[in-house]
Amino acid sequence: MWVGVKRPGLTTRLAICSGEAKNNAYCIILLSYHLHPIESKVPLKSTDKATLHHVVIVGGGAGGLELATKLGDSLGRKGKAIITLVDQSKTHVWKPLLHEIAAGSMNPERHELVYLAQAHWHHFHFRLGKMDSLDRDKKTISISPYFDEDGFEVIPRRTIHYDTLIIAVGSTTNDFGIKGASEFSIALDTQDQAERFHRRLHNALVRAQTQTQTLQAGQLEVAIVGAGATGVELAAELHNTTRELAAYGLDKINADRDIKISLVEASDRVLPALPVKLSHSVELELSKLNVHLYSGERVTEVSQDGIHTHSGKFIPSALVVWAAGIKAPDFLREIGGLETNHINQLVVHRSLQTTRDSNVFAFGDCAACPRAEGVGQENVPPRAQAAHQQASMLVKTVKSRVAGKKNLPVYAYVDYGSLVNLGKYTTVGNLMGSLSGGSLFIEGLIARLMYKSLYKMHLMALHGFWSMALQTLARMINRRTEAHVKLH
Ligand SMILES: Cc1cc2nc3c(=O)[nH]c(=O)nc-3n(C[C@H](O)[C@H](O)[C@H](O)COP(=O)(O)OP(=O)(O)OC[C@H]3O[C@@H](n4cnc5c(N)ncnc54)[C@H](O)[C@@H]3O)c2cc1C
Image (tube, rainbow, N blue to C red):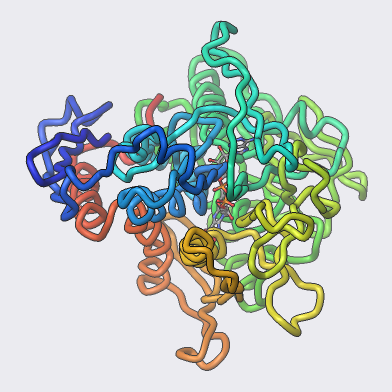
């Protein structure tokens, strides 16, 4: 957790003594100085508020938070526009970390960022709540009431006016309406879901340790539906963390004998969207980890005890994770009369403006954006690297709009390749682009460093280079003195 302290002329940040780290003898304090003086934050007069261009960004995820931060640091800081970020959560965790949180190899407290603090440091406003409707004539969005965990209303329904609206609400898992999927499986769309899965996994292990009767079929079996990058990475992380967890005093559990991890995939190979060579390499690694692969098996039903497939197989499993397919959140379907596709994504031009309203933009997973001119009907894939690139472009777009310019930049997706991280075991991937002369297969340390660099780029966009570097150093030191798996 970061704590902001004001000093004349400088914004100073103290890190990292929070949560478990408070008890850690090696908890260190870092200072990172921000070069912009705090006095330069221009206080808004009430007349400014009425005349300034108001940019509202909905969704503070991989793309939205980077955009709000950069616009706050530029337009917000200079008092040239009002930037407001709306998110349904109080804190941000980068979504590609969720499978590590679910497996227990990452402690979310160390990686979550408080929106209010980020807004304070980067000159934008933060509004907590869930957008649920849009009035394009009045240029307002509506945010549903916010309730606490006891059901008491904390914030009533409210509307926010915009001049430019940017929707970046991401995606949710698509269970395609399969019977029992929403009831008996867990998706990994939010930090809450990832933590819930981890608690269930931990409880299953503790129950197995303390029970007097023999283990039942499927009791310590995790079945993951979907062998895309998320499913494959989760399987490898789980292999590692279940063994680490068992080593912490769960002596009645023999991990190799008792814990089973299965991957169920409808197509005939893992990572169907990636090159065949990558699939083969990953399949080989997974077989070494004894992960059971059921390829060519379409799930027809999920029940309390396991998974049924179209070929009549039943895979017993007490824990089912659904990681197959995505869709944009349901509330977006034809919201405010905007064009949406069959998975609720807002259809946008390559300027990222929605097709029916040039004042409303969408990007990231929730947008259907043509990949590039002449690439047929293909859309930009739902990836963190796309959200990151689009956020960078939208900074220029918004500056142009605020300056009254008509010509806006257009987005072309640059595919730098795909990397799949099998936890501590290995990382494999293919690099794309002119440097590698097309597609280059990589694995091992280089692939791992490149995989990690995507998250570092996100941190750099949010905090700047030095804060990112110091955070990385602090985590490396902390890791030497603590368990590598979350033990509760
Ligand atoms: C387990 C996992 C691993 C992944 N690994 C990778 C990877 O290795 N590489 C890669 O490129 N991609 C990866 N992805 C995909 C990547 O996470 C997404 O493509 C990326 O996060 C999309 O960014 P976004 O800004 O569009 O949405 P998100 O990052 O999902 O952010 C959406 C935000 O909108 C908020 N929100 C949602 N609805 C509302 C509402 N109604 N009102 C207000 N706020 C709302 C949410 O709280 C959230 O903060 C992974 C995804 C998962 C689930």
